View 1 (spheres, rainbow, N blue to C red):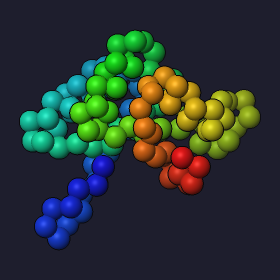
View 2: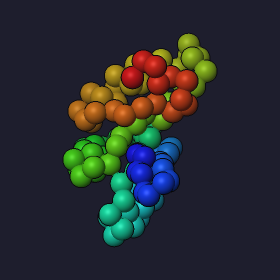
View 3: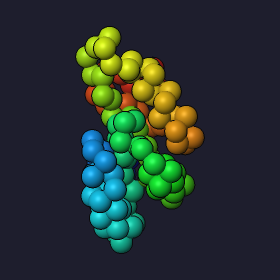
View 4: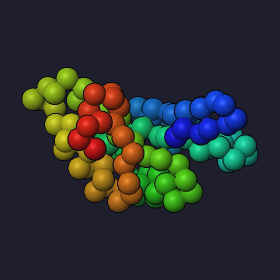
Length: 111
């Protein structure tokens, strides 16, 4: 999420690469952001959203103003892995919230 403050722009994002990060790290970050009235973009890997509790947590955050983006697993279009397009489809199906981008950025033209 990008915020304009005076003459400056500030972008704040977090990459959610592990289940541990989603379940134990992110709540701490969210607590600080809530305290200061800040919202960021959360780039989540589709393979770490494993439970209904995980889905619910991310949906609540989206409803409170955090942006959800996709953190790709398959950054090199490896045919042995789920395709980047399928990752995006899967995350949209899991969370049923808008997805605001993909990282790495070269995939953003098809979001």
